[in-house]
Image (tube, rainbow, N blue to C red):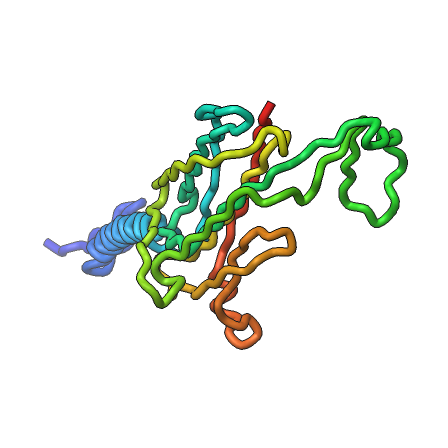
Length: 245
């Protein structure tokens, strides 16, 4: 009996090369694994960036608030308690290098001593501010009642206490001063802080005296010779007034 070759059935697929199905499955598995590893690495990097890198790149920032309350009086003398709070509102550690505290007495002069101010008209260019009061004027810059200054560790070669602030940390300082109600109608408290990032080289400071007798902070280096030191130095100034009436 003669054998016949059987024709291949219709619709039968072509023969696949050995291992092609395995290669596709392995490639898919490796792709998923790499995606998981990449996602994990990105999560770790994001955590490290947010927790360490980003705060280290952020500039230092210190806010200052002053609370003034009457603590007592004797005759025309008024005792005022001042609470100054400095707060690190930034994302990086701060080294406070120095502070100044000036209390200025302000005298109000009322008409007819001072002529009434005319209505505000069109400002003369290039004026950027206008300050007018009707019926009175203020002695400005006023008379210095009290001035204090402190240089902290890093700002001076002499012995000094450190004053560092972590992010979110606040430190308060209480002080009582006295004002003559017969001589002044109000007092103006002016506070200035100089600081830098805690992980940077501190900047030397010195005290200077202003034209009105107030004390200020100034870099202890020549900024033209060492501009990097002056660029690291940051300041925050705050002023508030308190009526003696």
